[in-house]
Image 1 (tube, rainbow, N blue to C red):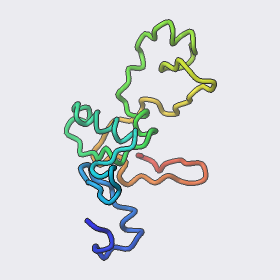
Image 2: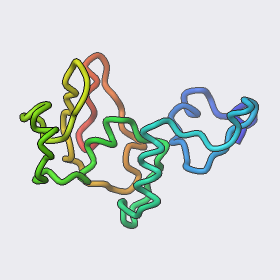
Image 3: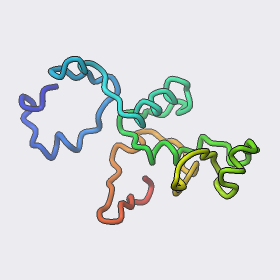
Image 4: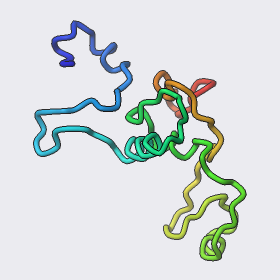
Length: 131
């Protein structure tokens, strides 16, 4: 769909969920499918069947959406290198001057149309209930 020919206003176009499989043109050599890092991971999860039969669009996932998915084993035994780097984290961070904090890590069960209508509320970047 070409937005200029759709008779939709800019707000309507910006509110549309981006669908997996949309191809982009006019930006060679970057024509074709377009996935940022988090969308790529979500697409890999989708290809692996982790979303069961839920209808999800990987292109709608942010880094936060990836780490909050309830896909991670919270009771795994961390390797000694992870414990030595930071014994308090529930995940493994081996490198970096700063500790990555991941609020809501592995707490959100997937559902159909996940993240397609979720607002991010400025200035504290909270989300509406259920997102």
